[in-house]
Length: 454
Image (spheres, rainbow, N blue to C red):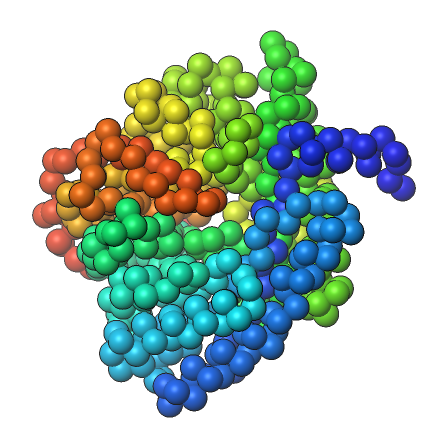
Protein backbone atom coordinates (compact mmCIF):
# COMPACT_ATOMS: atom_id res chain seq x y z
CA UNK A 1 0.00 0.00 0.00
CA UNK A 2 1.16 3.55 -0.73
CA UNK A 3 0.77 5.79 2.34
CA UNK A 4 0.37 9.55 2.58
CA UNK A 5 4.00 10.00 3.61
CA UNK A 6 5.20 8.43 0.37
CA UNK A 7 2.79 10.59 -1.65
CA UNK A 8 4.05 13.76 0.04
CA UNK A 9 7.65 12.65 -0.39
CA UNK A 10 7.18 12.11 -4.12
CA UNK A 11 5.44 15.47 -4.49
CA UNK A 12 8.40 17.14 -2.81
CA UNK A 13 10.81 15.40 -5.18
CA UNK A 14 8.84 16.72 -8.17
CA UNK A 15 8.21 20.25 -6.92
CA UNK A 16 11.54 21.04 -5.26
CA UNK A 17 14.17 18.56 -6.46
CA UNK A 18 13.69 18.30 -10.26
CA UNK A 19 12.38 14.73 -10.33
CA UNK A 20 10.95 13.96 -13.74
CA UNK A 21 10.35 11.21 -16.24
CA UNK A 22 12.83 12.29 -18.87
CA UNK A 23 11.26 10.36 -21.72
CA UNK A 24 8.61 7.91 -22.84
CA UNK A 25 10.11 6.28 -25.90
CA UNK A 26 8.08 4.05 -28.21
CA UNK A 27 10.19 1.47 -30.01
CA UNK A 28 8.81 0.50 -33.41
CA UNK A 29 10.03 -2.31 -35.64
CA UNK A 30 10.25 -1.36 -39.31
CA UNK A 31 11.25 -4.82 -40.55
CA UNK A 32 7.80 -5.38 -42.04
CA UNK A 33 8.14 -2.11 -43.99
CA UNK A 34 11.06 -3.32 -46.13
CA UNK A 35 10.53 -2.96 -49.87
CA UNK A 36 12.88 -2.77 -52.85
CA UNK A 37 11.05 0.31 -54.15
CA UNK A 38 12.25 3.45 -52.36
CA UNK A 39 8.97 5.35 -52.61
CA UNK A 40 7.01 2.37 -51.34
CA UNK A 41 9.50 1.93 -48.49
CA UNK A 42 9.10 5.58 -47.48
CA UNK A 43 5.33 5.25 -47.57
CA UNK A 44 5.44 2.08 -45.44
CA UNK A 45 7.73 3.70 -42.85
CA UNK A 46 5.66 6.86 -42.56
CA UNK A 47 2.39 4.95 -42.24
CA UNK A 48 3.63 2.54 -39.58
CA UNK A 49 5.25 5.19 -37.39
CA UNK A 50 2.28 7.53 -37.54
CA UNK A 51 -0.15 4.67 -36.90
CA UNK A 52 1.70 3.22 -33.91
CA UNK A 53 2.65 6.54 -32.30
CA UNK A 54 -0.41 8.64 -33.10
CA UNK A 55 -1.48 8.77 -29.43
CA UNK A 56 1.97 8.73 -27.81
CA UNK A 57 2.28 12.44 -27.04
CA UNK A 58 -1.31 12.83 -25.83
CA UNK A 59 -0.99 9.77 -23.60
CA UNK A 60 2.17 11.16 -22.03
CA UNK A 61 0.47 14.50 -21.42
CA UNK A 62 -2.60 12.80 -19.92
CA UNK A 63 -0.51 10.71 -17.51
CA UNK A 64 1.49 13.76 -16.53
CA UNK A 65 -1.65 15.76 -15.79
CA UNK A 66 -3.35 12.96 -13.84
CA UNK A 67 -0.40 11.99 -11.66
CA UNK A 68 1.39 15.35 -11.46
CA UNK A 69 4.60 13.79 -12.76
CA UNK A 70 6.50 15.87 -15.32
CA UNK A 71 7.15 13.86 -18.49
CA UNK A 72 9.65 15.98 -20.36
CA UNK A 73 10.01 14.20 -23.71
CA UNK A 74 8.05 11.80 -25.89
CA UNK A 75 10.22 10.02 -28.43
CA UNK A 76 10.37 7.22 -30.98
CA UNK A 77 13.10 4.71 -31.77
CA UNK A 78 13.06 2.51 -34.86
CA UNK A 79 14.88 -0.48 -36.31
CA UNK A 80 18.39 0.51 -37.51
CA UNK A 81 17.74 2.11 -40.88
CA UNK A 82 20.75 0.44 -42.50
CA UNK A 83 18.84 -2.84 -42.14
CA UNK A 84 15.55 -1.40 -43.33
CA UNK A 85 16.88 0.50 -46.33
CA UNK A 86 19.34 -2.01 -47.72
CA UNK A 87 17.01 -3.39 -50.38
CA UNK A 88 15.93 0.00 -51.75
CA UNK A 89 18.80 2.44 -51.19
CA UNK A 90 21.53 2.58 -53.82
CA UNK A 91 23.07 5.94 -52.97
CA UNK A 92 23.71 8.12 -49.92
CA UNK A 93 20.95 10.39 -51.20
CA UNK A 94 18.50 7.50 -51.01
CA UNK A 95 19.32 6.97 -47.34
CA UNK A 96 19.09 10.71 -46.64
CA UNK A 97 15.59 10.57 -48.16
CA UNK A 98 14.67 7.97 -45.53
CA UNK A 99 15.97 10.34 -42.84
CA UNK A 100 13.61 13.00 -44.18
CA UNK A 101 10.76 10.50 -44.01
CA UNK A 102 11.59 9.79 -40.36
CA UNK A 103 11.66 13.53 -39.72
CA UNK A 104 8.21 14.00 -41.27
CA UNK A 105 6.81 11.13 -39.21
CA UNK A 106 8.31 12.56 -36.02
CA UNK A 107 6.77 15.95 -36.76
CA UNK A 108 3.38 14.40 -37.52
CA UNK A 109 3.32 12.51 -34.21
CA UNK A 110 4.61 15.49 -32.22
CA UNK A 111 7.66 13.80 -30.68
CA UNK A 112 10.82 15.83 -30.15
CA UNK A 113 13.30 13.21 -31.41
CA UNK A 114 13.30 9.99 -33.41
CA UNK A 115 16.27 7.64 -33.10
CA UNK A 116 17.40 4.76 -35.24
CA UNK A 117 19.18 6.31 -38.20
CA UNK A 118 21.74 3.74 -37.31
CA UNK A 119 24.14 1.02 -38.42
CA UNK A 120 25.47 -1.93 -36.42
CA UNK A 121 28.98 -2.61 -37.69
CA UNK A 122 30.85 -4.08 -34.71
CA UNK A 123 32.40 -6.86 -36.80
CA UNK A 124 32.00 -5.66 -40.36
CA UNK A 125 29.95 -3.52 -42.72
CA UNK A 126 27.50 -4.33 -45.50
CA UNK A 127 27.20 -2.02 -48.53
CA UNK A 128 24.04 -0.59 -46.94
CA UNK A 129 25.91 0.11 -43.69
CA UNK A 130 28.62 1.95 -45.62
CA UNK A 131 26.10 4.04 -47.52
CA UNK A 132 24.22 4.98 -44.38
CA UNK A 133 27.38 6.04 -42.55
CA UNK A 134 28.47 8.18 -45.49
CA UNK A 135 24.97 9.73 -45.63
CA UNK A 136 24.89 10.85 -41.98
CA UNK A 137 26.19 14.42 -42.53
CA UNK A 138 23.56 15.12 -45.20
CA UNK A 139 20.80 13.40 -43.21
CA UNK A 140 21.45 15.35 -40.00
CA UNK A 141 21.82 18.65 -41.87
CA UNK A 142 18.47 18.18 -43.61
CA UNK A 143 16.45 17.09 -40.57
CA UNK A 144 15.51 18.56 -37.20
CA UNK A 145 14.39 15.58 -35.12
CA UNK A 146 16.40 12.64 -36.45
CA UNK A 147 19.16 11.14 -34.28
CA UNK A 148 21.88 8.84 -35.55
CA UNK A 149 24.08 6.19 -33.96
CA UNK A 150 26.67 3.68 -35.11
CA UNK A 151 27.87 0.70 -33.06
CA UNK A 152 31.52 0.05 -33.97
CA UNK A 153 32.50 -2.58 -31.43
CA UNK A 154 31.50 -5.09 -28.77
CA UNK A 155 33.09 -7.33 -26.18
CA UNK A 156 32.11 -10.37 -28.25
CA UNK A 157 33.49 -9.20 -31.59
CA UNK A 158 36.20 -6.60 -30.96
CA UNK A 159 36.40 -3.18 -32.61
CA UNK A 160 35.84 -2.51 -36.30
CA UNK A 161 38.66 -0.03 -36.89
CA UNK A 162 37.62 0.63 -40.48
CA UNK A 163 34.31 1.91 -39.11
CA UNK A 164 36.12 3.88 -36.42
CA UNK A 165 38.24 5.61 -39.07
CA UNK A 166 35.17 6.37 -41.18
CA UNK A 167 33.20 7.74 -38.24
CA UNK A 168 35.95 10.22 -37.42
CA UNK A 169 35.53 11.58 -40.94
CA UNK A 170 31.72 11.49 -40.64
CA UNK A 171 31.78 13.51 -37.41
CA UNK A 172 33.95 16.17 -39.09
CA UNK A 173 31.70 16.34 -42.15
CA UNK A 174 28.59 16.56 -39.95
CA UNK A 175 30.17 19.45 -38.07
CA UNK A 176 30.87 21.24 -41.37
CA UNK A 177 27.37 20.56 -42.67
CA UNK A 178 25.81 22.22 -39.60
CA UNK A 179 28.46 24.83 -38.82
CA UNK A 180 25.96 27.72 -38.93
CA UNK A 181 24.38 26.23 -35.76
CA UNK A 182 27.59 25.56 -33.83
CA UNK A 183 27.88 22.15 -35.52
CA UNK A 184 24.63 21.03 -33.90
CA UNK A 185 24.38 17.93 -36.09
CA UNK A 186 27.14 16.27 -34.05
CA UNK A 187 24.97 16.60 -30.93
CA UNK A 188 22.58 14.14 -32.60
CA UNK A 189 25.27 11.58 -33.52
CA UNK A 190 26.65 8.90 -31.18
CA UNK A 191 29.33 6.25 -31.79
CA UNK A 192 28.89 3.20 -29.53
CA UNK A 193 30.60 0.09 -28.29
CA UNK A 194 28.23 -2.52 -26.82
CA UNK A 195 25.13 -0.49 -27.74
CA UNK A 196 21.98 -1.73 -25.94
CA UNK A 197 18.86 -2.63 -27.94
CA UNK A 198 16.43 -1.01 -25.50
CA UNK A 199 17.91 2.41 -24.70
CA UNK A 200 15.18 5.10 -24.50
CA UNK A 201 17.63 8.05 -24.39
CA UNK A 202 18.72 10.09 -27.37
CA UNK A 203 20.75 10.41 -29.40
CA UNK A 204 21.63 6.71 -29.18
CA UNK A 205 18.21 5.07 -29.11
CA UNK A 206 17.31 2.45 -31.70
CA UNK A 207 14.84 -0.44 -31.67
CA UNK A 208 16.79 -3.69 -31.54
CA UNK A 209 15.95 -6.54 -33.88
CA UNK A 210 15.33 -8.88 -30.92
CA UNK A 211 12.61 -6.58 -29.54
CA UNK A 212 8.84 -6.95 -30.02
CA UNK A 213 7.06 -5.21 -32.87
CA UNK A 214 6.23 -2.19 -30.70
CA UNK A 215 7.20 -1.49 -27.08
CA UNK A 216 7.26 1.29 -24.48
CA UNK A 217 10.52 2.14 -22.71
CA UNK A 218 10.74 4.85 -20.07
CA UNK A 219 13.77 6.85 -18.98
CA UNK A 220 13.51 8.42 -15.52
CA UNK A 221 15.97 10.87 -14.05
CA UNK A 222 16.57 12.49 -10.67
CA UNK A 223 20.03 14.01 -10.05
CA UNK A 224 18.44 16.74 -7.94
CA UNK A 225 16.64 14.19 -5.78
CA UNK A 226 19.87 12.26 -5.09
CA UNK A 227 21.79 15.44 -4.32
CA UNK A 228 19.11 16.60 -1.89
CA UNK A 229 19.09 13.23 -0.11
CA UNK A 230 22.87 13.30 0.29
CA UNK A 231 22.74 16.65 2.06
CA UNK A 232 21.16 14.90 5.02
CA UNK A 233 24.15 12.54 5.43
CA UNK A 234 27.06 14.98 5.09
CA UNK A 235 30.06 13.64 6.97
CA UNK A 236 28.57 10.15 7.36
CA UNK A 237 30.53 7.02 6.44
CA UNK A 238 30.39 5.33 3.03
CA UNK A 239 27.95 2.65 4.15
CA UNK A 240 25.42 5.32 5.13
CA UNK A 241 26.09 7.20 1.90
CA UNK A 242 25.48 4.09 -0.21
CA UNK A 243 22.25 3.20 1.60
CA UNK A 244 20.95 6.72 1.03
CA UNK A 245 21.64 6.57 -2.71
CA UNK A 246 20.07 3.12 -3.04
CA UNK A 247 16.88 4.13 -1.22
CA UNK A 248 16.57 7.28 -3.31
CA UNK A 249 17.13 5.39 -6.57
CA UNK A 250 14.44 2.91 -5.51
CA UNK A 251 11.89 5.69 -5.05
CA UNK A 252 12.78 7.36 -8.34
CA UNK A 253 12.52 4.08 -10.24
CA UNK A 254 9.08 3.37 -8.79
CA UNK A 255 7.86 6.60 -10.38
CA UNK A 256 9.20 5.43 -13.74
CA UNK A 257 7.61 2.01 -13.29
CA UNK A 258 4.23 3.63 -12.64
CA UNK A 259 4.43 5.80 -15.75
CA UNK A 260 5.66 2.92 -17.90
CA UNK A 261 2.80 0.63 -16.83
CA UNK A 262 0.21 3.35 -17.39
CA UNK A 263 1.56 4.23 -20.84
CA UNK A 264 1.72 0.55 -21.81
CA UNK A 265 -1.90 -0.09 -20.82
CA UNK A 266 -3.30 3.04 -22.44
CA UNK A 267 -1.43 2.59 -25.71
CA UNK A 268 -2.00 -1.20 -25.78
CA UNK A 269 1.72 -1.69 -26.32
CA UNK A 270 3.93 -4.06 -24.27
CA UNK A 271 6.07 -2.52 -21.53
CA UNK A 272 9.79 -2.93 -22.21
CA UNK A 273 12.13 -1.44 -19.61
CA UNK A 274 12.67 1.39 -17.18
CA UNK A 275 16.02 3.09 -17.65
CA UNK A 276 17.08 4.73 -14.40
CA UNK A 277 19.75 7.14 -15.52
CA UNK A 278 20.81 10.21 -13.62
CA UNK A 279 20.58 12.36 -16.75
CA UNK A 280 21.30 16.00 -15.93
CA UNK A 281 19.89 19.14 -17.51
CA UNK A 282 21.17 22.72 -17.58
CA UNK A 283 18.63 23.56 -14.82
CA UNK A 284 20.05 24.67 -11.48
CA UNK A 285 20.18 21.73 -9.05
CA UNK A 286 19.85 19.05 -11.73
CA UNK A 287 23.52 18.13 -12.01
CA UNK A 288 25.51 14.90 -11.62
CA UNK A 289 28.64 17.00 -11.01
CA UNK A 290 26.94 18.56 -7.99
CA UNK A 291 26.19 15.07 -6.62
CA UNK A 292 29.90 14.25 -6.84
CA UNK A 293 30.69 17.50 -5.06
CA UNK A 294 28.12 16.64 -2.36
CA UNK A 295 29.90 13.29 -1.90
CA UNK A 296 33.06 15.23 -1.13
CA UNK A 297 35.14 16.44 -4.08
CA UNK A 298 35.57 20.21 -4.38
CA UNK A 299 34.95 20.17 -8.14
CA UNK A 300 34.09 17.40 -10.57
CA UNK A 301 37.47 16.28 -11.90
CA UNK A 302 39.34 16.60 -8.61
CA UNK A 303 41.16 13.54 -7.20
CA UNK A 304 38.53 11.12 -5.94
CA UNK A 305 36.02 11.97 -8.67
CA UNK A 306 36.26 8.61 -10.44
CA UNK A 307 35.81 6.70 -7.17
CA UNK A 308 32.82 8.87 -6.23
CA UNK A 309 31.24 8.30 -9.65
CA UNK A 310 31.81 4.53 -9.42
CA UNK A 311 30.07 4.46 -6.06
CA UNK A 312 27.18 6.58 -7.35
CA UNK A 313 26.68 4.48 -10.49
CA UNK A 314 26.70 1.19 -8.63
CA UNK A 315 24.28 2.25 -5.91
CA UNK A 316 21.87 3.74 -8.44
CA UNK A 317 21.76 0.40 -10.26
CA UNK A 318 21.32 -1.58 -7.02
CA UNK A 319 18.44 0.62 -5.90
CA UNK A 320 16.83 0.55 -9.32
CA UNK A 321 16.79 -3.23 -9.77
CA UNK A 322 14.97 -3.61 -6.44
CA UNK A 323 12.22 -1.28 -7.65
CA UNK A 324 11.50 -2.89 -11.02
CA UNK A 325 12.00 -6.29 -12.58
CA UNK A 326 12.54 -4.58 -15.93
CA UNK A 327 15.43 -2.19 -15.42
CA UNK A 328 17.39 -1.93 -18.67
CA UNK A 329 18.81 0.45 -21.21
CA UNK A 330 21.82 2.27 -19.81
CA UNK A 331 20.75 2.89 -16.18
CA UNK A 332 23.30 4.70 -14.05
CA UNK A 333 24.90 8.13 -14.19
CA UNK A 334 25.44 10.22 -17.32
CA UNK A 335 28.27 12.74 -17.46
CA UNK A 336 27.51 15.00 -20.43
CA UNK A 337 29.32 18.31 -20.32
CA UNK A 338 26.92 20.61 -22.15
CA UNK A 339 23.79 19.33 -20.37
CA UNK A 340 25.20 19.59 -16.83
CA UNK A 341 25.88 23.04 -15.36
CA UNK A 342 28.21 21.60 -12.74
CA UNK A 343 30.30 19.88 -15.43
CA UNK A 344 30.36 23.09 -17.46
CA UNK A 345 31.63 25.05 -14.45
CA UNK A 346 34.27 22.42 -13.68
CA UNK A 347 35.49 22.42 -17.28
CA UNK A 348 35.67 26.22 -17.41
CA UNK A 349 37.65 26.32 -14.14
CA UNK A 350 40.14 23.74 -15.42
CA UNK A 351 39.16 21.05 -12.91
CA UNK A 352 37.72 18.78 -15.61
CA UNK A 353 39.73 17.72 -18.66
CA UNK A 354 39.04 15.39 -21.54
CA UNK A 355 41.49 12.86 -20.07
CA UNK A 356 39.74 12.92 -16.69
CA UNK A 357 36.38 12.50 -18.39
CA UNK A 358 37.77 9.46 -20.20
CA UNK A 359 38.82 7.95 -16.86
CA UNK A 360 35.34 8.62 -15.47
CA UNK A 361 33.75 6.78 -18.41
CA UNK A 362 35.28 3.55 -17.11
CA UNK A 363 32.75 3.60 -14.28
CA UNK A 364 29.75 5.60 -15.57
CA UNK A 365 26.81 4.58 -17.74
CA UNK A 366 27.90 5.77 -21.15
CA UNK A 367 31.00 7.68 -22.18
CA UNK A 368 32.31 10.95 -23.57
CA UNK A 369 29.06 12.79 -24.01
CA UNK A 370 28.24 16.21 -25.48
CA UNK A 371 31.82 17.48 -25.42
CA UNK A 372 32.69 20.46 -27.60
CA UNK A 373 36.22 20.46 -29.04
CA UNK A 374 38.03 22.87 -31.37
CA UNK A 375 36.73 22.91 -34.92
CA UNK A 376 40.20 22.22 -36.31
CA UNK A 377 40.45 18.87 -34.51
CA UNK A 378 41.44 16.32 -37.16
CA UNK A 379 39.27 13.38 -38.20
CA UNK A 380 42.08 11.02 -37.16
CA UNK A 381 42.15 12.51 -33.64
CA UNK A 382 38.38 12.08 -33.35
CA UNK A 383 38.75 8.47 -34.52
CA UNK A 384 41.48 7.95 -31.92
CA UNK A 385 39.18 9.20 -29.16
CA UNK A 386 36.42 6.91 -30.44
CA UNK A 387 38.85 3.96 -30.46
CA UNK A 388 39.99 4.68 -26.89
CA UNK A 389 36.42 4.82 -25.64
CA UNK A 390 35.41 1.68 -27.57
CA UNK A 391 38.37 -0.15 -26.02
CA UNK A 392 37.18 0.79 -22.53
CA UNK A 393 33.74 -0.62 -23.34
CA UNK A 394 35.07 -3.75 -25.02
CA UNK A 395 37.48 -4.73 -22.24
CA UNK A 396 35.16 -3.83 -19.37
CA UNK A 397 32.05 -5.43 -20.92
CA UNK A 398 30.05 -2.20 -20.67
CA UNK A 399 28.41 0.31 -22.95
CA UNK A 400 30.60 3.24 -23.92
CA UNK A 401 29.92 5.98 -26.43
CA UNK A 402 31.36 9.15 -27.91
CA UNK A 403 29.38 12.27 -28.77
CA UNK A 404 32.04 14.81 -29.71
CA UNK A 405 31.21 18.14 -31.31
CA UNK A 406 34.08 19.76 -33.24
CA UNK A 407 32.63 23.26 -33.39
CA UNK A 408 33.68 24.76 -36.69
CA UNK A 409 35.15 28.24 -36.30
CA UNK A 410 35.60 27.98 -32.52
CA UNK A 411 38.54 27.12 -30.32
CA UNK A 412 39.47 26.60 -26.66
CA UNK A 413 37.90 29.31 -24.51
CA UNK A 414 34.87 29.78 -26.75
CA UNK A 415 31.38 28.50 -25.94
CA UNK A 416 29.11 26.49 -28.22
CA UNK A 417 25.38 27.12 -27.73
CA UNK A 418 22.94 24.34 -28.71
CA UNK A 419 19.80 25.46 -26.90
CA UNK A 420 17.03 23.65 -25.04
CA UNK A 421 17.87 20.40 -23.28
CA UNK A 422 21.22 20.27 -25.08
CA UNK A 423 22.41 23.43 -23.35
CA UNK A 424 25.82 24.93 -24.06
CA UNK A 425 29.39 23.76 -23.70
CA UNK A 426 32.84 25.29 -23.30
CA UNK A 427 35.22 24.22 -26.08
CA UNK A 428 37.71 21.89 -24.38
CA UNK A 429 41.34 21.31 -25.43
CA UNK A 430 42.30 18.07 -27.17
CA UNK A 431 45.70 16.38 -27.26
CA UNK A 432 46.88 17.37 -30.72
CA UNK A 433 49.68 14.81 -31.10
CA UNK A 434 48.85 12.59 -34.07
CA UNK A 435 47.48 9.05 -34.00
CA UNK A 436 46.91 8.89 -37.76
CA UNK A 437 49.28 5.94 -38.49
CA UNK A 438 47.41 3.93 -35.84
CA UNK A 439 43.99 4.79 -37.26
CA UNK A 440 45.05 4.10 -40.85
CA UNK A 441 46.11 0.50 -40.17
CA UNK A 442 42.55 -0.72 -40.84
CA UNK A 443 41.04 -4.06 -40.00
CA UNK A 444 39.71 -5.11 -36.62
CA UNK A 445 41.01 -5.10 -33.05
CA UNK A 446 40.23 -8.64 -31.82
CA UNK A 447 37.86 -9.34 -28.95
CA UNK A 448 39.50 -9.75 -25.51
CA UNK A 449 40.20 -13.21 -24.17
CA UNK A 450 37.39 -12.99 -21.61
CA UNK A 451 34.85 -12.64 -24.44
CA UNK A 452 34.91 -16.42 -24.94
CA UNK A 453 32.06 -17.53 -22.71
CA UNK A 454 30.72 -20.68 -24.42
